[in-house]
Image (cartoon, each protein chain N blue to C red):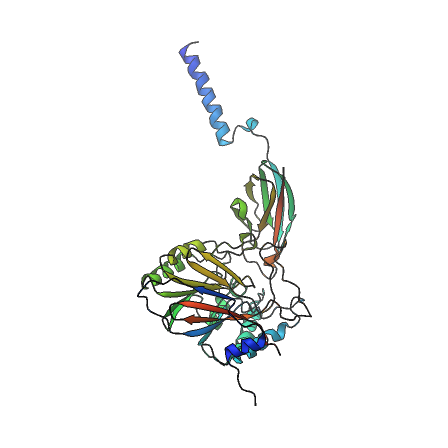
Length: 122
Length: 294
């Protein structure tokens, strides 16, 4: 092999690795499941969602009325949900069990009951 | 003619006497002693609330005022640790509830009454209506050798204390000697009691870090509508009962809905407390019912 060909092969390999690392090389990554949650005072729909342990998911959040919060304390994940926009949060449930989520922006008289849970199964 | 009963006598009469929890704070030798006195902490009145968890909603606060007034030895001052009113989306109604609350507590014989907001009072308008009726949302005062600090962790709708107030706290603490007698009032717990139920302060750890170098600090708070005691290092944190509805123990049920009213035991789970500051920075807490037993 000429040194030029060797260089091109190495360069192509590096490019593929770089694309994979940046997420652009889609073939190497299975598509992640997308789960949509709609928020409105004072409820998330759905508010109980089953997940598989170790399988990352993308949560797509929208608000039907006012600015809400979405917080999963056990995963240290949170987002503001702005009406008219879709916000995405990637979650990786690493162990089986219940992961509570809640609205962490005070939104009125039903705020305390605005919560839900991911049930993570083996 | 009825004679006003001594406070300890009243406790015996009410059948709830005795110190249920005493926190003694380690003191360094040579620290200035606080004079003996006591204050009353009332919390989570939620004036304006209506619903099955309290069919006596309209009379619970007036009854509590009467009970406090019946304490033979008057407290030096009374502190309301937030959620004076139940939240409403209507700014006019919010102000009306605050005005009604203020008119009722004007019936307290003790005139040194201090207030701070809860999230129901302040989170929807960042404390605007509260400040119109009750003044500042964070402040300090000194009383008989104790430095009291009132922290606002509710005007921000996410419950942050915020860097500005933390800077104010740091500057205030810098003026206090390391062995000063310090009492902190907050609405939410400063520590992570149950973040899944929003029973936490996102930047509360920063406040605790600032307080930690001081040897004699005690925190009193509300928000969780039940008695609870917890230590972060040498700092005790004492949660008070509420005066409208009781809440369940953290995460003991899926939602933090109020505990049901028990007609056979009205006001069960509700109450207030007296806090006795004794020399050598010891605080004795006594839990009291809304109405005294007959």
